[in-house]
Length: 333
Image (cartoon, rainbow, N blue to C red; front, side, top):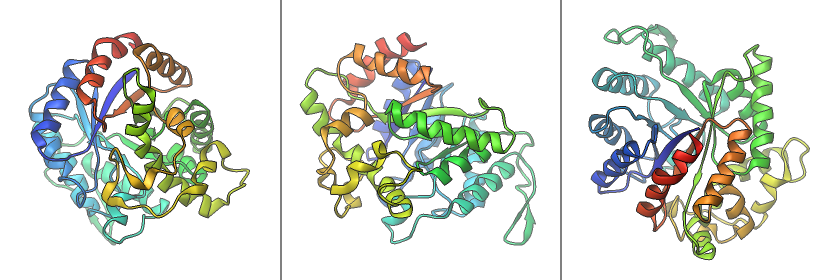
């Protein structure tokens, strides 16, 4: 199993770069960053600095979307980073949540997400594409660069589309039961497109907090259930509360959800996440002592997870990162 680190680009940016350097020293293979430029600092500027100060680690957004930037800008950004630092970038992409909703826009369609994946990937590889009724290419790009496209989603149609079109699948929660359901849908999409069942890499991304005080850990990580709840609420709106297409293990908990304030998005103490019960925190996140982390990650690995990406948004960032580097990463390798 590989390990990634997911970071908010809060100032000072030097702290984000420092955590990335330490992650590489601890054996992590990936660093991902939030991509909501109106809420946090511009991620791609910081990713360039991380690449400059590391040697092997791969970087990318978790996740970008088809609406914040023009697709040619996305492709040129990734290709520029590859030219400067070698092909160490990858792209996590979804329909858009905080990046778009915070500025008064709606998430984009699955069709747009899928087409953006294709256009950006081909441009980074040096190919020409039809875009806005014109044939374009990035003339300075070295042909042959590959940009892995990792799709993030929860709903049946999103999962099926990811299986058909993406190089990797990102599930932003660490619940084995929900993982099994989502992987079945992703693999059905891959089969429908005549792709091998194991053609997609699988990444589970969730907060991890190493320690003994479970009640405190829950209070620090409850925000994550609120963040996931934004996407789950969209699924309930589309499919209904009792849909046979979506497991109640995913949807039941959002019944008590109220208005969501993106000003507190992804932060411990988010008041918009007070509706999230302890059970959801325990299921969606990874809590407890080192041995409990290792046990849960082994269960996820057995289901096909190739990478676990640690959301590190709580009051014990240094201790948790060190515990993973000294114990968890080594145990899962």
